[in-house]
Length: 303
Image 1: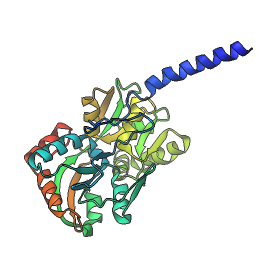
Image 2: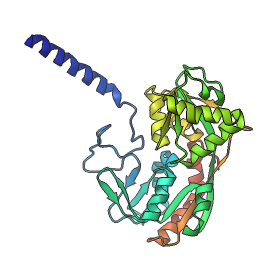
Image 3: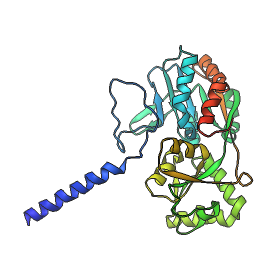
Image 4: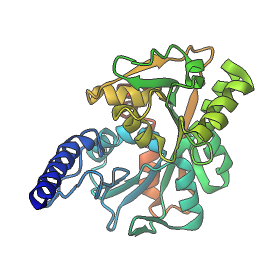
């Protein structure tokens, strides 16, 4: 009996080890981490993909809406090349609603880390920026985007258009409109293409049944649920599909026709009370430059 129990235990441990070897193969951070004396990232445990750079004594602090995380490596490298005086830059790429609350409240806690940095620059969609207009001394438009449906490689559920997300056999990863502005824009597409009944089916009936999963941070959760086959379809920004394919991750996409799609407008603002006002001005100027536009084109944005 003892040896049988020992055998079962060993087999269980081997199974767990085998599963764990696969469990995190697509986990972020997907960006290239900055150079450091020690790198200690443990997938699924110690992994902070939406905080970048130097958190101690930064010379510039930027809050970006999270769906632009794929641009950060190239943007920071290009900005530092043009402005070598800025060696220490700290960036957050969390959902824009969370960043807005952080600006209003003055702090954010992630795990055991409390961050009290005030941003010099905030970038988000036009609707969010307009609602916070009193916070900015200057606002500029710099990029545009559209929606697509991300699916696993080969599109195993044969998703043809947005209406298929209402099927009972399709598991959907959907941004929660309470957290992320893109969620409201996707719901507007549901209403436009399938009417209130489609929106209710995806956002109410399927949520209650568990076949629509509402994300809190869609630019991480939606691709991961597709990659790990926990979802069959995920409405995302087109740029997010482009990035996953650049990483050679096994995803495909279903296009949403332009007449049914939306066009998101991204804007960036200098905070009126920016602690590093000159750095804020320099960065916003840079975001209007041809080098910044080329980076956004690379990742599927329109400029």
